[in-house]
Image (cartoon, rainbow, N blue to C red; front, side, top):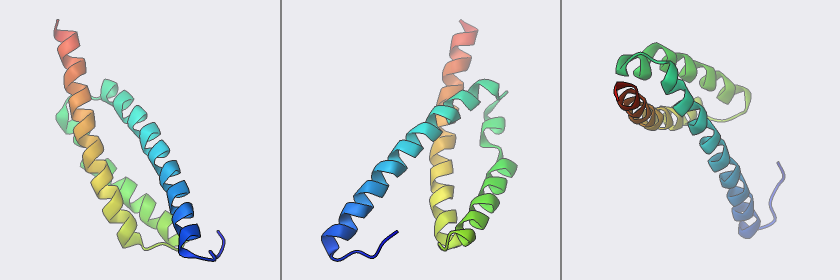
Length: 100
């Protein structure tokens, strides 16, 4: 991290980081879809205990990295909810294929 000289440099850095974040979200979604293969039903997909474990983990990571754990928790809860919906769709598609 470096101190920026102007707003344009700030924006360039934010754009660079956004690019990395989107790539990582893409990679995470790839593995979320794979997880659907190993789950028995929708309740397995929702996995509330696992969600809370992830939230605790990323909150600790936030503190170690000088970012508000509250912000990280909100971002992760939203991201996880979206991924749960994706995984439910994927799980449904897998079950449709197995029934045929």
